[in-house]
Length: 440
Image (cartoon, rainbow, N blue to C red; front, side, top):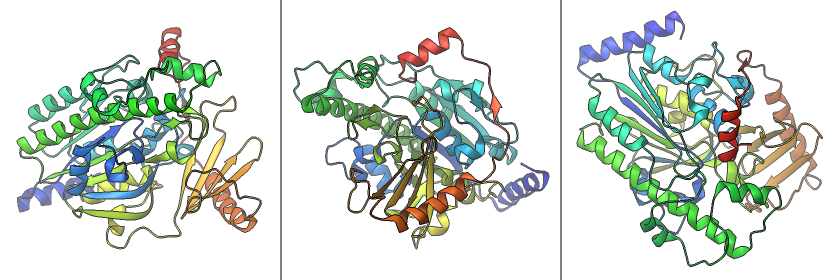
């Protein structure tokens, strides 16, 4: 934050103290690999997420929120900076946050917030620079064979109980929904239907499918989804307990809570599994739900939003200025009227392709254009008529292609905010861990 911005932020806190009004706290929750359409609040008919549905009823649901990337690292970089991957430079597992890019925690720390983070992915660990701005930062290692909930919840409760400074910013990242698709028996009994086949929901088996070594029939596909949503149900209980702790501590009225995800997951909609290869809706559409000071209750925000909108939105709701360099918009200015129909949002990258950083996508209204930058191939989808993205209409609608391609070209021509920070190569142990988790 520059000197003027710091002065403005500190002045806002001084004025708040003089008037006796405490600035709002911020709790930002990211649930890795959580598809929007598997939550009840986004139309899922199975009882996967009652606690999240109750939370959403107390706040605002963003109808269509899109990730900036189909995998963890660049998507979270966008969530925490308000910049697209090509602008913040964190585009591969060997790129860290540049010194010139200011993450949300640094901005809030400069404004006087007590800051803490508990993260559940090596992509959010110190190596990449996400500890910057946090007074307390802890990485809970993720494991592929996990069944019970991770330790993030218990550590978050302890942090909330111990914090005495106000206001606070707590960032929580949960890996619980990510493969392996496993959860405690009571959740599997509730949501996993009878199945006697070989599918087990393990990352190892899903990688074998990607290599063409196994085949999943329709019953196997159904079992994958069942296992996945059972994990969501288990995670939902954790969310409910976390929100109950806020209530118990008397923090609900003055805490802005934002719940979202970095990306979704594929279940053979386009013959793929896991995530990272495509920009289809099952991977890039994510939940985005807000509750707290300044947020209307029981409302849905129409139009297209993006993860880059979170930083400017929360800063506005906290009464703080947004960075000069930010790609997102303040969603709060559209709470009443909805987002502009002409708005374009973008998604980037493909880290599981032999040509890394290949894909670029633009979405405007119900139209979606995806470009492979290396071979020039284009695909155009009309999501109103074809929500499953089965019918490429690029040859039939050349005028739409021209319009969206012009917007995409202008987006790709924008310079990065800072030069990418290249990290040292990964060690053999790190490579093996990434393979076990499905990232290689």
